[in-house]
Amino acid sequence: MNLNDAQRRIRWTTIAILVGASILLSVLDSTGNLDILFGFMRDPLTAVASWTTRQTDTVADALSGPRDLEEARTEIELLQAQLEALERENEELREIQGEWQILQDLFNRVRQTPELRRQTANVIGYDTSPAVRSIIIDKGSEDGIRVGMSVESPRGLIGRIFRTTQNSSQVVLITDNASAIPVRLGASRATGSLKGRGASGDLIVDWIDLKYQLEVGEVVLTSGLGGDFPQDIVIGRVVQILRNEADLFQQAIVQPATDFDTLEIVLVVTDFTPIDTTIFESPTEN
Amino acid sequence: MSSSIYLAIPLMLVLGLVETAVLPHFPIFGAEPQLAFVVALAWGLLYGIEEGVVWAFFAGIFTDFFSITPVGVSSLGFMVGVTAVIFVQQALPKSRVLLPLALAGLATVISFILNIIMLRLFGTIADFQSITILPTVILVNMLTILPVYWLFYFINRMLRPRRVQL
Image (cartoon, rainbow over the protein chains, first blue to last red):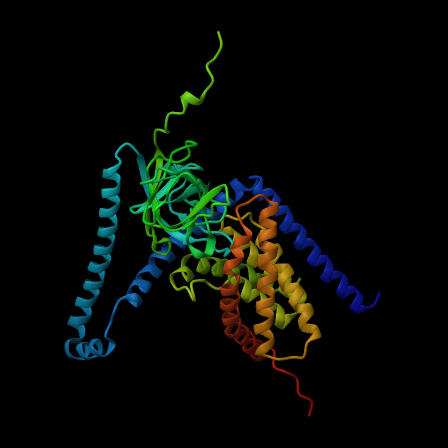
């Protein structure tokens, strides 16, 4: 065997080992066998991600704010240290004001539906895969968060818990393609299944009976059917109706009420009373 | 396996953190670059298939770490994408600008589609409708690879200067 053959053999062995390792890891992880191991590893990493996000938030906020650089330069020359101190204080106050606004919105949201028990959580990361849409929050199983719990912002439903570690959780957003939620339309009372449309950020309500006359602007709410989500959480508004008399069902395009790119604090619904479905149960025979 | 693995692991961990905590605040055309993947690809284009595959493996692991996808799925997509384009690179004339751009686009397409297929196979959330974001991801990855590729190229030239026969 010459050197080239040996090198080639080593190369393909390496590739084969790594491909095998990837498949093995994927199988083990998707069957939940690596949850404990990765839970241990994810917790410190999400703590780092949380810190990084906080720092980046501050920088991003500063960059997005309107600034007249020339004016700022002149002022800095004139007032120097005093101005710098005041600007720093001002930035801090703006940050506090922004947080206060978010907290007030959250408080108002909680006050509207006091029957739901909620847990607040900070958004500390976004999904790294462009194929799926999820966020990472800083509350996990130690805080009482469980898989399947619904997650909302002050403006409406944003998703549900997909996976938890001790101190963090991953939330699948309702805009994800595979998300499906039973919903009801506010004015027409039509029911359907809400699906995400991925990258576009829009949502679509499918399986709406043709007998309903839908209107643009109708509010879309969770129906509570299935018991997975609380009833009457706002999701968004109908912006387009796709109706064809030849079809069995009609569809509605929905603009979500929440801006998913600017989420900072969310509410996890930890306990709620599902709608009563006992009338559907068959009576037991004596 | 070369000693570059000791660089790949911490670097990919940091890039995973950057992808989840920093880049979403600064989207380009509404998408973020797959930084870990692009770095692995640039490394592979400069140092060959074996290095590229190892880096792509760790890029995928740390990408999945901060995603709801099963750990390992992105590795497979990244490795296949990197391997395929390095084979293509060997068949094409050398160019330090156009080639990395084109190969980054091709590798993104391969890895993205394979990723969705794998996610479907594992019964995890993902839909072929996700492909609508693919053109933007391709563009952003193509924009990202050039500075990364050139950075690695110059570091390589500084650390391993070419031998010149007089």
